[in-house]
Image 1 (cartoon, rainbow, N blue to C red):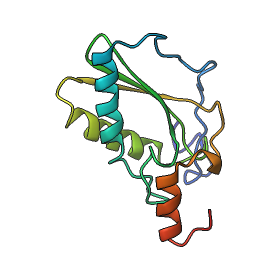
Image 2: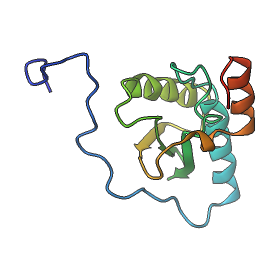
Image 3: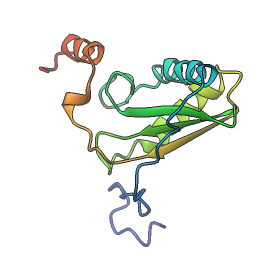
Length: 138
């Protein structure tokens, strides 16, 4: 979409091709792939939501992680809003964090999913503690 197509270029655009169904990882996950998925999750904790200042894992934005073909990490992830203008920034941070630190992973695929819809109930205890420290009432 060009600036001419959008009369208000500062307004966020909804994803024109949302996923119809949430991709599912394999039912059985070998131990070595589960270990790699754990490493990916660890480094995703370095990805900070710019609006809230809390990492995407503790915010409950990461729904699932698995490894395919021994080198591709797949992440089902959401945002606090489908119209979030920071999607590209978060995706860039995720690529840098994972590909820059997990030697076994050479590709990161993020599936942006909107089901289930994110809500504050998805924030884990650590995320709630961080938000309280920042002055939020959660």
